Amino acid sequence: DNLVFVTDRYKAIENALKVVYPNCYHGLCMYHISQNLKAKKFGHDDKVLPAFYLAAKSYLPSIFEHYMGDLRRTAARAAEYLSEIEVERWARCKFPITRYNTLTTNIAECMNAILRDAREMPLIPLLETIRSKLQQWFHDRRIIAGNMTTPLTTWTQEHLLKHLKIAERMFVQPINPNEYRVIGKPIEGVVNLITKSCTCRKFDLDQYPCAHAMAVCQHRRIEFQNMCSHFYH
Image (tube, rainbow, N blue to C red):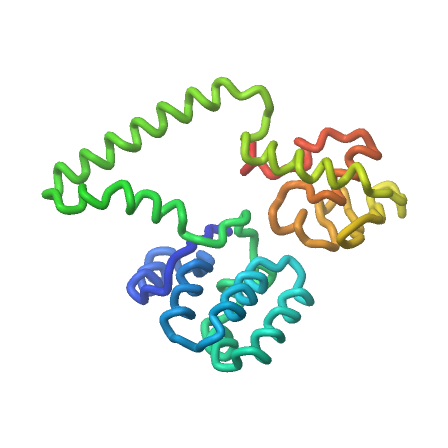
């Protein structure tokens, strides 16, 4: 349940997913779409690509519509092309379930880069190269994990510390025991501790506390690690 694949727009992949994983969700890689935009030569690349990236990364539908509106005014053909792709497959705020901040296929591209030379080998040596590389990675990461001093991954811990610095400048107003209005820049937010959500939608979509939620955790003296999805532990 809730399995998500993020790929480029290669039709064979889409067809295979429909057969093998008919109940999965299929997201599209933001970077590949941006390269298609460049290849289509709609013009105004200096405006089209930034507007596309901002729209794709938006957490709030209203912000998404703002940047898409800019795109329609600047390059109507580019905006029409993006609409034909199905925005719910590439826009973060439109995707039906959680993508855990995974908007590109970078992790697969990393593997492709490492296997660039190995792909010229016969099948058995190719498979052995893949096996050997994965063995090395699992070993190295097991050592790193064993030396960690926090229950969260290093990546998550660093992001939460950034949110904490922002949260320190925010003001928390209780609404009821579970909901809190948080006032601060760049926007205000209403946090619900039970649903682990915030009206800024970063808490909802990333599945770890946004700055608003961090401010509430400080106010309530709650361990913010407990508000993170198990994905980040």
